[in-house]
Length: 112
Image (cartoon, rainbow, N blue to C red):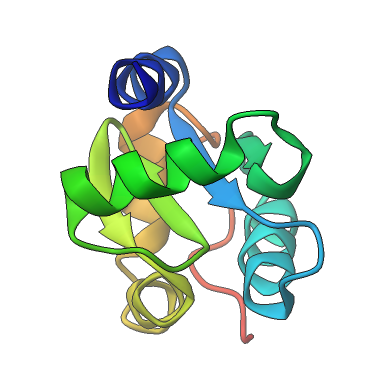
């Protein structure tokens, strides 16, 4: 059930960040998306009644148990380091633009 819910959520938005409200790496990724002007859906696992089940389902699906767990355009991107690396390589904004999460005239990178 949790896996189906996770997949449905990922399919429902251009960018989905599975997060925990107290996680500094999650805050960093969400702040980066905000700075880039990207719209995203954040699911705070520590605030969800089935958060631990969702986290286990995400681990089963992606092989990643940690948060943040980032999806862009339905594709698993990875965690904080992966997202920051894509940004530093200039690859994040094109992914976000293609997903419809930001306008094509947005900044190309943010120094994080």
